[in-house]
Amino acid sequence: MKLMSHLNSLTYISDYHELGVEGLLVGNDEVSSRHSISLDFEKMLDLSKYFEVYVQLNLLYSEKELPLLEKWIRQIAHTKIAGIVFQDFAVLSLAKKYALSQKLMYAPETLNTNHMTLDDLKGLGVNEAFLAREISVEDIVSMAEKSQLDLMVQVHGIMYMAQSRRPLLTNYSKENGLLLERQKYILKAKDSPLKAWIFEDDHGTNVETYSELCALDFLNLLNTGKMTWFYVDTQMMDEYRALEIISLYHDAVVSLNQGTFLKDIHAYRPILNHLMEGHEADSGFYNEKTVYKLEDVRMKDNEKRNQSNH
Image (cartoon, rainbow, N blue to C red; front, side, top):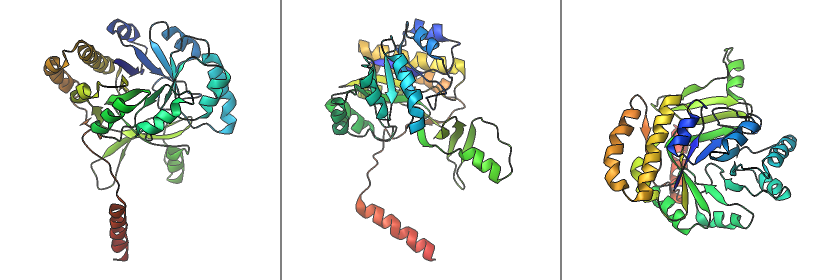
């Protein structure tokens, strides 16, 4: 088992290295979305001397963006960059064209929910997959034990909810005569306590959970089969808190690999509770099953029709 961290700052990068963090997920404004800092390619190469660097090519690219995507893949080929995280199959085609030796991690956000689809992708050159966050721990374990691909699962941090290519905040501000800067805002649903982060980047609008997934108690269950990476997303964290969170999960991964996790977790829990003070904790879908039966959908539709008729 290894730890992959979203990189939100270069301030403590030497500390990450000393901790023994194996993987870094990095991005660039030209070709990436939902990344905290934009790194140029030379900096990525520099980091690849010390970490397994995975580059986020995680957009669905338009035809006019393909030359830029090709430029990045051509640059990545024959370097020490470890992998690419993607969802557009144009990446697969270009990876084949340039004979990439890097690992290709398929990450379509909400779609990786069964091992059979992923196993079919292996024949296309996919090596790894980032599992959807919307499935239970039971389903994740089942996939890890049946999958032919190496898998990554998120264990901490805010979670993806939605993305649109439209500049929704910009459009909203223009329509309502508001002056909004390009920064991160809290979106609150009407008549509901639920909140979410919403922000724009060069490629549209992103919505992510306000609460942070905390899966420390599930790590021992998830440490099975083809599960290779535990991922910590440090978006919306300050630099020092991100380092502390990563340090905690790195220690947990070490104890898993050494077989002492069930004993050590009693020391980890109060540390995590302290780091979560002032922040909303969430277990995501780990304890929930999302099953849509046809009769349930019809019942909900009928309820909505009845309400509208009144």
